[in-house]
Each structure stands twice: as C-alpha cells, then as structure tokens.
Length: 370
Image 1 (cartoon, rainbow, N blue to C red):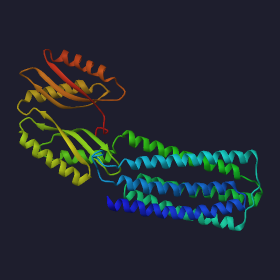
Image 2 (image 1 turned 30 degrees about the horizontal axis):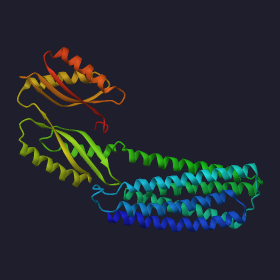
Image 3 (image 1 turned 60 degrees about the vertical axis):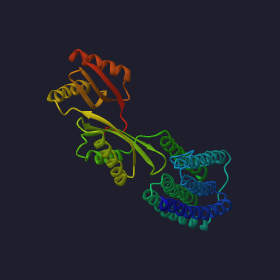
Image 4 (image 1 turned 90 degrees about the vertical axis):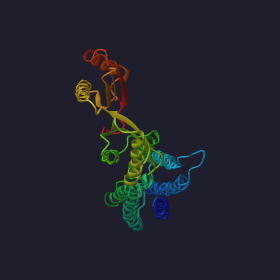
C-alpha cells in the first residue's frame, strides 16, 4: 500500500509540473495571438494540474490508519477527492463553453505566429507521452484517479490537435474556427467531468464486483473438497484495493462445528493470499448426504423453480423427510416482485408436495451468478 501511494504521488507531481509548464506557455501564446481556443486549452491544462494536487491530498488522507471512528480505514476519501476533481473539470468546461459562445457572438480576429504552431505541436507530443505514462501507472497500482488523469491527458492531445488544425486552416484559407473549436473543447471537457463523476458515484453507492474477481474468489473457495458450492458472494469496497467479502458455502450435513470452523479459517487465509480480499464472514448451507430420496426431491424442486425465467438459481437446499420440511434460497431477477415470486413458488411446490412446509429465502444477483 505504501508503494502504491508513493507511485500515485510521484506520478501526480510529474503531471503537475508538466501541466503548469504547458499552461503557462499556452496562456502567453493565446493572449499574444488573441486565440480563445489556445487560452481555453491553457485553462484545461491548469485544471489538470489542480486535479493532480487534489489526487495527492486525497491519497494522503486515504492512507491514514484505521481508528475508532473509522475502523475500516479512510480509503473512500479517494472517491471524494475524485468527485472534487470531476466538479472542477465540469466547472472549467461550463466556463469555457460560455466564453466560446461569447466569442461566436462577438468574434475577435486571431493572429497566429510560427511560434504558436511550434508550441502547439510540442504540447500535443508532450500530452501523448504524459497521458500514456500516467494511465499505465494508474493501471499498475489500481488508481482510478490516475487512470482518469491519463485518459484526460490523451483527450487533451486531441483537443490541442483540433486547435492546431483550426490555426492551420486560418493561415491557409483565412477562415476562423476559433470560437467553434472552443465550443468543441468545452463539450469534451464537460463530458469527461460528467463521466468521471458518474463513475465515482457508482463506486460510492456500491457497484457490482468485477466478474473476474468474483469468479476467482468462488473458484478458490470451491477448490476445497468439502465445499459443494459458493453462493451469495457480497463484496464491500472501502477504497481502491480495500475489499471485504462474505459468502455462503454448501457443506455436507455430517460435518461437525469444529470441522466447519477449521475450514472457514482456512478459506479466509486462502482467499486473502490469492485475491487480496478479506473474507469477513462465511455462512453455511447444509445438504443431505444420508438419503437418496432427498437428492431426487432437490432435482424436482429445482426444475419447478428454474422453470420461471425470473428464477436464476437455487441453492442451500435441505429437506427433512420426517418432518416434511424444505428450505432453500433462490436468486431472483431485479425485474420481478420478490414477494409475488415467493408466493408463486409456495403455491406450485405446495401442490406437488402436499403437507410440506417451505422456507424459501429470496436472494438478489450480487455477482452475475458466477
């Protein structure tokens, strides 16, 4: 975690230096040539530098150790810092759009020099190199802020290219596209800010875990010979690379509490070692091993349940033939009313197995049923 923070801070500092350098030159060139597009491009670079500053502050605060008030750490501060960065980008985009529209209404003649063209070319190359570097580092340390900054830098290269194209068109044909390119730049900035904010809101609300991670965790758990299946995997995220999970495992009804305890501890160590996820809780479903009739009933019940397209899975099945009692969980789609679905299943199973009591627990599809 310490190396991750150092990488984020080092990369962000490089971004700050480069963006301030580019912003200063573009601002001077933009004012000398009366180019609104170049000035807006300079403002965009300055907002990128400010974003990197916020990323550093957010990383520092997020790395604080857990305390009594926040026992799971402060990792989610990174999401709040990303929200702030997104707000700054949106503000810069909206301001740029207003200024560009003003220039369309009251145009001002641009005066490009050879130096302007050279600086724009250098800026484009610099942004491509910076964007590729920052995005690569972001992927290496799983930093959404760095990846977003890298992608934003690559977008900046495209924006600068459009400014260069408008300058070349003006020099060759005498047609000024300054203000219109400014509008285009503004729209790109606003779009980037909105997408960043939307992604971060999803992280804060709690999104479905990545299928690859869910598959790996369930695979690790199911490798144990006693485990017939892993279900109800719930992953809670408390910041980048800070995941806590719980799940249910299906075990034979002959296992003792001592055996289950040793198994769950073994699973916790194994899951953390292979995925980095902390398995905080392991629930248990028992399955029948002493009666072939129970297995036959399970298959029949599964056919009835899964005959409905809104019933995605059945697990945790157990039947007591003596007391005429069945219990199981069924995963239901988000499109169906769960209360109505359970009533339907109770009715259909009641007609098939008269005199039986049913305990059906509705589950939601937490991890794509992998």
